Image 1 (tube, rainbow, N blue to C red):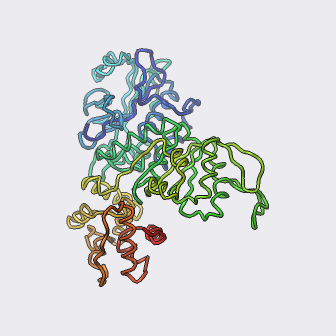
Image 2 (tube, rainbow, N blue to C red):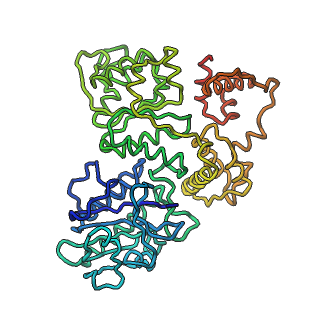
Image 3 (cartoon, one colour):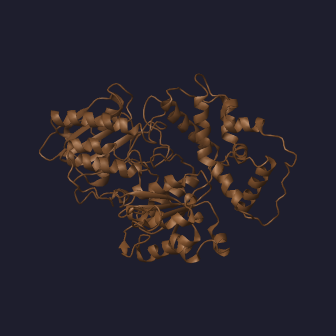
Length: 520
């Protein structure tokens, strides 16, 4: 399917003839009793994280069926591109999404009219479409369906439907509750990547199957598939990709889509760890372990017990600490610095790097045995330039919408600015595009954004002239080595000004600083 290829068709109590589709079979702890009030609270509880939207909507529908004593609940969304109602978010070729035309069936009538429909006997109502029952073997008796929208008179974004109340027809109290919940659901969706397109009156546009991660290109679909597969195992994962590609977002997506989602997600930035403090940061220390240690402090490993430990830029972890980490990965035991007690922690480890770890192993800068421990599963995050101009434009429009809301401005891109955005090479990847759009929105109080306010467009005209602008690079360098040399030559040409080099190159200053520490 082209657009919203899927959304959570979730069931409460299910007859044996209608099993739950494989991708909706929950692996999470969603079995606690649900009250109607707790469901309203739960809808927004995960929206600050990179949750799998299928799983989130599936859980919401399951809980809704439980709270309303119904046999089944389904959340449908209107695809703004096709105009049809669809029942899942993720594009999974082995599973077929439920699709319902606007105006056909009960949910189609609700989407068209914007009215709540309550039916006591589906078999006697002309609006009921038995097609899906015929496919699944399910028997629909009673129906309650309400439109999903952010406000009472807002555009319809979808339909929430519950079937077969346990004690007979749905009542007035059920109708009032479902209408209130559908409004909350509409407001919640507006905060996700399923947010409506500002130019569309009806429906939502799918920007990505994981909340806060935008992208629908084929290379990104492969990444999403790996994230889902990795989430269901407890093996170590290594995320690889250039700086600014969003490795941390995908690491959190693995965590919140896994059975450990209710545990902590603890991040360690290995680039900021001095060798003398790295062990304490990871494993904690006892009082008196060293000068200034006036109390016992838990390390990140201990804090992540029951959840996920994310080691960002693990290639920069000091060599002397790598052995201690290896022991923990092998035995799941550790000691605090200055302590004698052997402790245990149940932690899933995710790592990320932009470095060539294989080269680091060959050069003795990274332990080979540790490399194999962290490299059980690999997820390669593509650079923005490989995701295509259409996706770059979609990302730019997503950031326009995000920062337009933040700064209370209706931001658009002029045709010239859009051309610059589509054709820039983005050495800083998604992070560079995000910061560029935010800057442009701030600098354009009204009207369309012009190309001259885009930072990378200004850099082309403002780039300093230097006498030694030609850089000669030998063959057989890795990409990482070539980039490092080019960065160092740029800093040299700018009289050692690392901040100016970062601005000219369109990368973060710490990227320049790390390149300056290395010698190829």
